[in-house]
Length: 469
Image 1 (cartoon, helix red, strand yellow):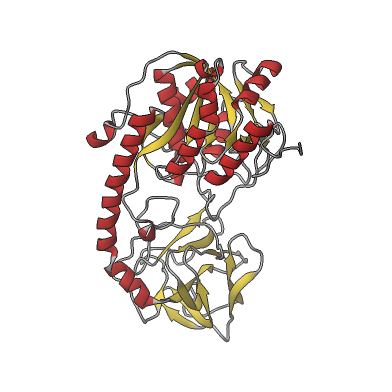
Image 2: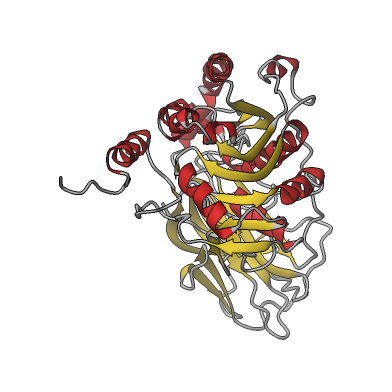
């Protein structure tokens, strides 16, 4: 599936698209993350919170886990966590908790804007079998915009559409077009235009509302596509970016999907209740889950992490915190050995494998719309990192003021840029799914693959291979 470009503010016809003018203005004010692990959730969710007893640990391990990842948690309990509990020394020094959102998203995946959030795909009464003007200038808007005001018109497609005409914002008045103007549609972050239309004094197209349009060869933009009509300022030309006319692709399928939505919601809510019951039983059985008052979606993972930091500070005495994910191989013995040999238990320390000058994505799963810079500050890749107690306390105490971004790894990097901890670079926290002898962690494994890694580890002391005997 193609990706197109940036995102836009909601304003659309038939709600089949979202579009907006992207202005050159200061970034939005920071929004606080105010969710907490207790006291703020529904009463029926608070029963999921076990009562903790405070004691001191050398390391607290927080494992980010999705609500439905039962199999991955089971594999962890039967591999490295089981080994830890059987270890006479480490079992008393480490506390391991899975971090799970207390609430599931109440919108079925098929009815969300994207699978990473909990936003309802808000399409009602779609206009079928006719051409639709994607957007237009409000009646009270000035005839023209200056170069300093408008950078581009950007859009995101929430259901497949067919572009039939391209248009341009232009106040031709009584004199018509005075210069040539070309309107282009670009795929996200690509240099080559997908569609274009040329407007000139002898061929200015047809005016509809405040835009002038010309027909183009019909072009399908798929669901979740994103694109832009960039504004190219030319002296003396009042044109402001562009627009387009479209029809809804597969309108009958869309209509049927909307008509069956109520039934899907009923089934989904029933499944959520079943999932709550399973999680409550799992938590009661193993006593290793921290439920934080967050809707459990990918976009909320940074807030999950902040809530876990608050829980750790409020309930536990500790020296270091290790964060990892439930699809990661972790060798805690190797972690402890490295801490001891390299004196990594110092204050204001952050130990991991850091990505530097990582470009900000404006599309797809890692789409970032809030962080204005083209590259992120240094951040540790997702298989694991360790931070000192004072950093955890700082994050917990500022959790309601820290802005969350598209992912928890990059959010952590942005938060850490504010305090400048001492970074300890270590390539044995692997960033990609691969196996290296002596590795501390490795990400993105299936339950079966994690089981096999640990089988090799126990049989031969090396998760990557067993030497011929």
